[in-house]
Length: 202
Image 1 (cartoon, rainbow, N blue to C red):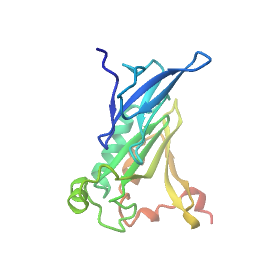
Image 2: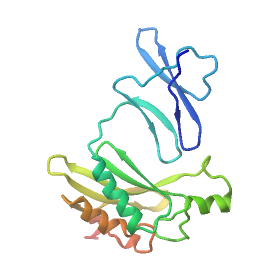
Image 3: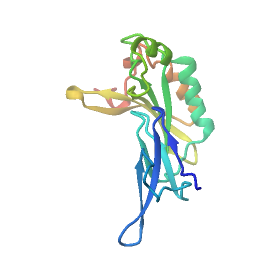
Image 4: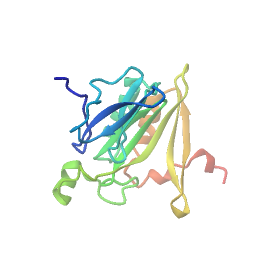
């Protein structure tokens, strides 16, 4: 009996994927969490498609594959800097196309306004959190020149009425330099001392 492809996200929710033929003969894919009763579940991911778990709430999407321009070594440079230099105790590194994004859990704060909890400490205080814990964007490393491997680093800037934009801090062809210089401020009261280039002349 064929075994359908299954993806389990961090909430321990199983996801299955249907391939449904449309009236025009094309294939459309759907995500279901209960496989019972379906005869059109795929057994493997089709060429050119990918399953992605989004960091914010663990939502799973099925989409056409987006090429990643970031190398695994570059991702690890940022991850190591956050782990070794920042005050975050619960974070996630997400790669999307030409960008490395640092996420922090809701039990950690950007500027150290509250104690930054580990996943285990949050579980002890609030019970099982994996079903509802959220993550938020903290810092962005964007590849702006593929050939020269030049990156920009930016942080979220918050405005009135819950608005926000991403403020550029610096650009360099040395990602390790950028990661070490700026990740050390994550989860600390020095985070908001990082002035975006767009605001330096104001």
